[in-house]
Length: 184
Image (cartoon, rainbow, N blue to C red; front, side, top):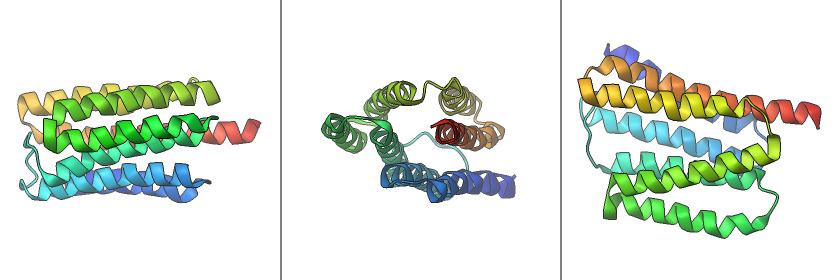
């Protein structure tokens, strides 16, 4: 089971990293690189708990949440047609980064959720591609359900699905971007 957990986590690091390498534009590259860093931080955090899921606050768990928030903000900026988004996104991201150590995970997740909604609105406005909802399905709905099952049961089998769902969500963003570049 340990080897499977490591492999699943490695693919969750590599998929967004490959997306970052294939993208054009600093904002896209940086956003996907942040998603990769989030997965790496989560992987390192698991080594401190012997790969058993523990719902705790830690430095690497904070890097996980902060990297996800930063990635969402960067991907929002990447598709926004207005520079006015940059300051509010920077402020929300900074608040999300500060919230984890100061106010805890629930506040950080709330700010991250706000960034997610902003990202989805901007991506929909820019691309209007129904495949964007695959990001919501895999990256939000299924990872949340699997996380709830993981926390509720303590069975690591559920963790095997979270990383691949996250990777599919990142791939779905790539499909949206690719379709746009083909039709533009």
